[in-house]
Length: 197
Image 1 (tube, helix red, strand yellow):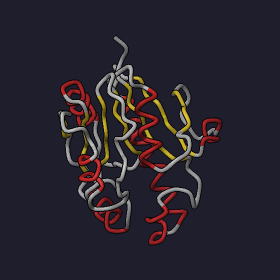
Image 2 (spheres, rainbow, N blue to C red):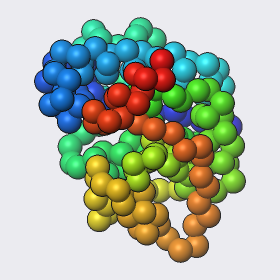
Image 3 (cartoon, rainbow, N blue to C red):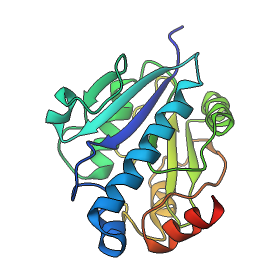
Image 4 (cartoon, rainbow, N blue to C red):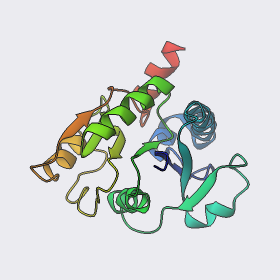
């Protein structure tokens, strides 16, 4: 059986292109520094999962040729569409195996959180890692499960993002939950994260 896949959904680190909500409060240069540091830490964390293939799913699509990425990692483009369409496409690309998709802005994520999620993926049709703001930091699908309608009618960056995603699942699906973690999207998230260091 082929190994599970960890899909890291990320944007090429360029000033003014990453953490734009946060940048309004702390400035584009500081937001870029934070994004780069968090993305590097996320890649290191994922690298502890030796039994998994790691794939960076990047935007814009031309970023697959950028020199910003660590050597040796597989790079694939996100393609067009809204966030849900791009995530569904990335998940479906690897539907022949268990897979989880995460973002690059989860500073508290540790290898054990990912291992727990991978176990949940084996036992459920879909698995989510809830975030404190009502969204989710992780979504995973068991091998063979397709996701074309997974994120239809989801309000993104909204307190009901996870609830909307769950409502869209087939009723017969078993859904697992991974640990609740915080992502960093705005000034409040950023300050809480900095105060914990």
